[in-house]
Image (tube, rainbow, N blue to C red; front, side):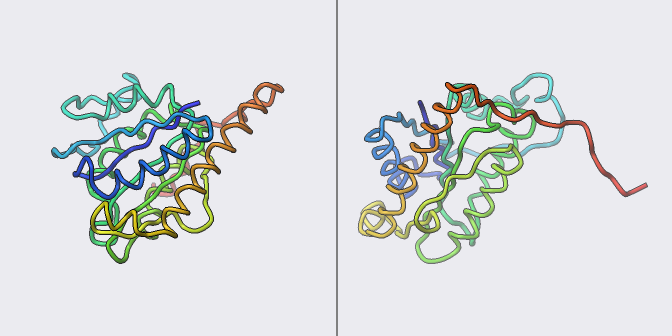
Length: 207
């Protein structure tokens, strides 16, 4: 079993990476491999609603790492999206990244457990987690919780490692993720499959 951890920070080895690494290490202790995928520090093109992804099963824009992430998403069993907090929200980069990754390729994510975490110097982390959770509910992904909201405090990686409660939250999150993945695997072995999804109905009251 494998969890793909998305680092939505422009800093490859910053606070968000430090938090994700704590989760990845605990996942490994629970028998689940974890891979951190960094979105990079360059500009991320936002979705322009061209619709090409619905037939390509990839994004038409190829100048960044969205399609590389989608290739890895196909084989992942679970996901963790991590972001620093900018103006009480996730970074614009991670939102643009996920807008494109998940718009026409939701089948790569459906019914796979997911969680979000946010790292902040002081505030805005709960709102940031809430924003990222919206992507999961759109794709029918079970949301994994922890013993508190998935937030950590710190302005540097060293400060992140001093947030003892935050580190505890991350370890519990990893254990809960591993447990749910194991439950799904056990259920699948007993013939319990993902539910059938209804498609096609789109309500629009504007005439």
